[in-house]
Length: 227
Image (cartoon, rainbow, N blue to C red; front, side, top):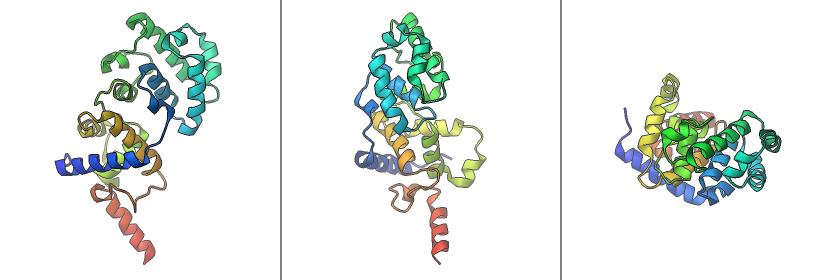
């Protein structure tokens, strides 16, 4: 069952208010250049923000444009990437640069299907590039977003019964406020990373607790622990 419009509106409004106050100041949020957004998104895959920030800056000093990356030796790109790990990522990023140069004249396409046809770009990364670089109201669904949506709209029991991410993707797409995709998606990711965390979520002061399907169970556990 889809959430009511009143719940959706409350979720959107409170999340955006939270983000205006608590959103992180990250270097890739100071640019809309598609290449730079792509570099940040590839680096952030399975890697903590704190480790990515200095490497992101170093990488862009060495390869400031997609053309510069495409012209580089892939071995040099891999060595510069160290020690972020998951070392297939620089190889894929280098391949994306070369294919984009060959097929699109060095400009990343602003179409979801075209982006996903490039090496190593999946549904999440395509949505992130469309949203953060091109200003589209595209949905994103990474680990943090999945956790937030699952807790708020499904609750622990219903979330365990989900098979795959198709319902979560459909929900994510339905939630993006028109014209606010950039801020809304950044807010979702920040909220999951810093507030609605995996192990120690900040449930008591949470601005979404009144619409959260998981909060009543948390409140009951807390009352039981205090009694």
